[in-house]
Amino acid sequence: MVDRDISGICHNWIKEDAMRPLKSRTAVSVIGMIIFAFTAQAATIGEDGLHKQDWFALTFKDVAEDIESAGEEGKRLVIIFEQRGCIYCARMHEDILSDPEVAEFLKTNFKIVQYNMFGDEEVTDLDGDILTEKTAARKWGYVFTPTIVFLPDQIPQGASVADAAVATMPGAFGKWTFLNMFKWVNEKGYEGEEHFQKYHARIINDLRAAGRLDAE
Image (tube, rainbow, N blue to C red; front, side, top):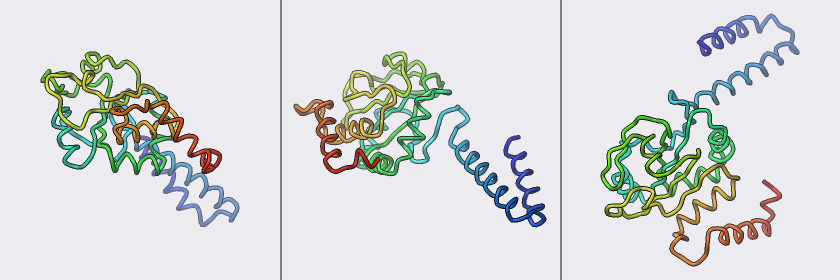
């Protein structure tokens, strides 16, 4: 209904535009651009109420299969739990995942599968349990959205996702905390001696020295 109404409004504006003074036509053009931007942004919301990225992977949510297919692509599997109406999820999509530097790094190195914390799609856990998205969230102990779950690059035997995860990131963070966590996991920092917080502080100091923190 909204799209049809907007389409009709825009049609009438185009039809009447030639009859308007230049100043009026300029104002109408600006309003039209605002409406276009609004509808383009609204189109990123799926029927389940979750924000979408066209580079998120659509899978059968068999976690072992997803780890394997991610590896075949030279990537790591990440699960992101979100829910309808989550303002922090919206912030993550609109402010963080829209950043070209962040998006490019994630698309290159990770296979990201979105889960609805209260969804009913079937999920197969690493230990073979058949669950739904909402019962998986309950089993794995995830109660915040967004929650980002980083899986190992090899399929573990007999462990659940919660047991196998190499790192989790609950909640929404700023660009550099968010991106640095993905970089730390990609570099397998969890296997080394440098804790993420120390890694993050080191990268922030490098960015500050390069003048990037003030510029962004």
